[in-house]
Length: 390
Image (cartoon, rainbow, N blue to C red; front, side):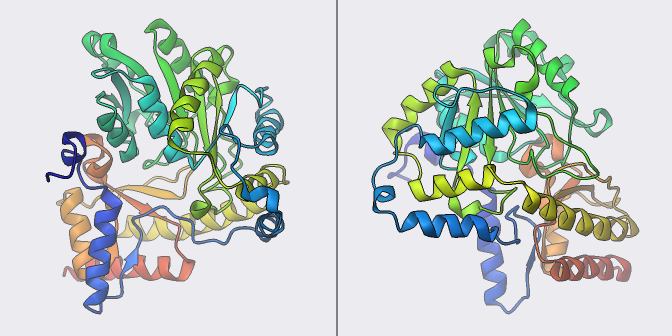
């Protein structure tokens, strides 16, 4: 296409926009489609956050430009959250930056760090945006293998010397999208030690850090001694407070990496609407009872779904985090053939594992972020289709 740069023209279509188009086409044909493909919470934003937004939206001073780094109230709320939740001290002036959602922040960090040809270790399977951002920054993606047998923890031993010599940055994501894998602090300690030995920087995507089950509390990589020397961590209010459309997140950690990111952002945007930042501060300063209630709902949905999936021949394990189910497809199917069958014959959208990297073949990702009744109907459709041999 003559209107696109070579980098944009060579970028594959964003997976979930493709699913959205297919869903629209089926709906126009009269198909009742149940979308278990995309991870957007169906639960409402807590009313106290909306009330704070409404209050702040009436204040004329909030309709001016935000400081580039975000308002102090929000950055202080992030710092207080880290101290309260993780016992980690971060300086709200130099070690915290407001983001227009963590997705934006991760993409801009990658472009702020990489020179053309620099390598990035990317979880495989992992969030597709990592690969897109590296491509647009003229970087080079290096697969960081994760597998089921190892609990989807990084397999550093499988990285080659040439790959490590060209790598500059390592991306991590726990609890993980798409696998739902959660790790203990020991995994982060190993990652920091490895990164130090190989002269790497680390960016940890903790978008699902507060979406956890069974009493599990996901650690922060910043809890590792000395992690701030080489690490930043991204957080989002989208998944934990059901604020996807609000586009508000943050990054905390190494002040030099944050400074580099802030330079890119100050040339690209002027932070988020101040009223949204202040409402987000109210969320982070809350007692998190709404987060706990959300997690209880997702956990209940997971408990209802897993037995039905096992009944149709899918090998699936309960996760400790995220609102995703990562399941092996039944024998005789590839990820693509199974998801296509479910879409065309059951009207259920699932995400094929290879959308998240070659390590995802043989798996599908199913989202629990739909109303319980629709989720149950989707699973029953799948069951009926597989049991009937259609």
